[in-house]
Length: 449
Image 1 (cartoon, helix red, strand yellow):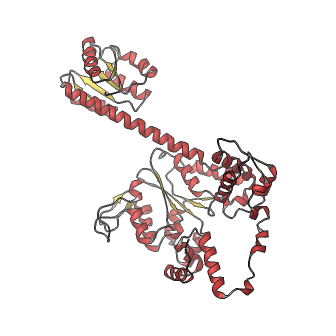
Image 2 (cartoon, helix red, strand yellow):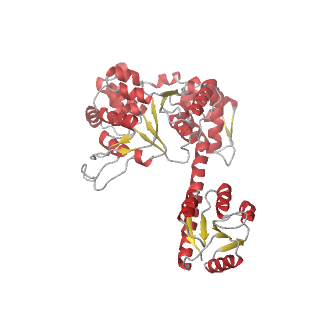
Image 3 (cartoon, helix red, strand yellow):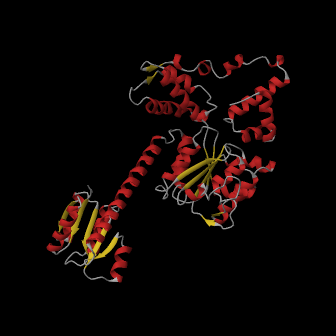
């Protein structure tokens, strides 16, 4: 059986009764009123899914009812019903936000169909609202945590730039929370109710990255069996984060420059430019100005991206925030049992340099929570490399004087790949070799992630 609460407003009692009987037979919870002014209070007091109102009523007409309903809840569809069909009043009603405009001579089946469509619309609006609230809640639970002076300066800058559409370039070491800052910019902007999308430019080969960013047309390359929209198209009206933008190839850099200059994209294999309205945020852990000097990054793209730079400090430069972060992660990973951590354990964690920054701290706290069955985390639960001090780990290093050149090369390859999360293009750039050479070395040493 159908469901939905409907309010009928008409100064003719007979019309209210006719519509009420017809719609109740469809299974709806129907209420009626002969006073438009009364609707203001009724909508505020009760949650209606659809309002059907006559347009010509004494004292408080249908357009005023429409305005009152939209003020109370913009997601409630309002159907205008009138005995006097007029193109001018229909246009005015739709311009003010009416869902549909019907004459009283409309057939019963037409009225039922419009009501069903209005209820479907209402359902979609409510689901959309719930989804956005869920996304906002998830965002709030993953905000950047901190009260130190340098992170407070970042927060101030974020909230100053968020209302604008200016391009932002976020600098910071791996694990400092660059994507969280990008999300904060998005959710503090006028685009908060639209998409936030991101892509790691160093995680995909050039051809695949180009297709993911800009889309492609059917037949543009082997396997392109249908047209595909890219992420720029999917993020229309929202915010798009280009993470590790410094890893983009020269060809991709040219296309990104076009997006920033012309606000348009051309899909792979396409010939027609498509306008795009996306707020662009880029992030990098590389020194882009050094890459410009080396000729691997375009200066014109850099100046387009670097409109508003935001520098995220590493965790070692904001040690006052470590206790706050520890409590934050404890609540996230152990919100049911309420585990606590001793001051000795906190002191050990505060004394560590955190080369992996906040992400490394998050992983350590999660590991300690999962592995410790007791209610209290102590210094003994802190990983040995932190307990013994970062420099103390050097005693575990092998004596390199007894290692062959190949052993040293293999060890260095593993270290660089581990630090770059096995991103081949990024690792080859650090090593100063091309990607194909790196693949050959991996095969030679039998290395896998």
